[in-house]
Picture (cartoon, rainbow, N blue to C red):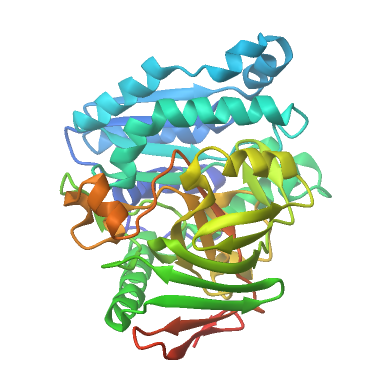
Length: 418
């Protein structure tokens, strides 16, 4: 049982994999006995997927349903499918996922895909396919963004991801390094992972509570290529770590997680922002992102790589040019301290402060889950088909909290809490 036996650096890979699965189910997901689980993963994540399935049934799951994706099959679409197919998505599948969530199923995603899978494909087709999926998945995704259900994301090392992260190493060495980094950043290497997660969760809640006491009206960012003022939504709430979902179950949505986050005001972003890490989005790489905001909206956007993909992303709908999340992460976080560029948003967003284009989390507003879309918009919450995080934090970034009276208070200096 987790928390009763110490796990050491000498534990075997299989033991750590089992523990990661158990922690994901019991700590990250908070699965309740009798609850269904809907899981998504790539075929390369099959070993972890099977262990999570076992641990879910051991925890009392009534049914585990896993949807596996295949990179080779994904590429075949771009090679052989008719052009018209890229405006089509399996709506019946996403409707089924939404029905599962409404009937009480939990959601677990295993991340770890090839960060460059579609980088050599036609960006127009990639953009069209992504939009079609976003439209089809939206009703189900809204249940997640509202935290109506318990859900979590955990990662599995895969050969393609490892090769991208450690390109100078032999494949087996790269894979071992990536697994070790996953075990380290998800606290599996701790003597008592459950206790370590409880302590970390409490720390994040404490930081969020301090920010909620401050009630800042805006944040001011200054760093290389960044001079940016971001207003916060009316009645915003800072969150961090775990949360009690609408179904009453406590979950930690991201494993790992190092952020505290809230909802910015969709109309109150002004200035320039430069990304500090590449963004791997739906199998394509976008690097050197630099954008300018006016009155909440991106009016200029460029990237040194993936410009067309970035342009199509922000053209998804009007809300795609506006912000739905702002998150603060100290530069000394364990993920940043590892020195590894993971090329995976689950990890890289927890190595640096970040912002997200698109859909806002209604749970980051007071009584937000009870508000209508019109009421959410009136408080400044953004609405969009997308939600894409990208990293802007570094050891050179300073952030001030701006009070309602317009007074600037040091919040972060050189990437660390002030």
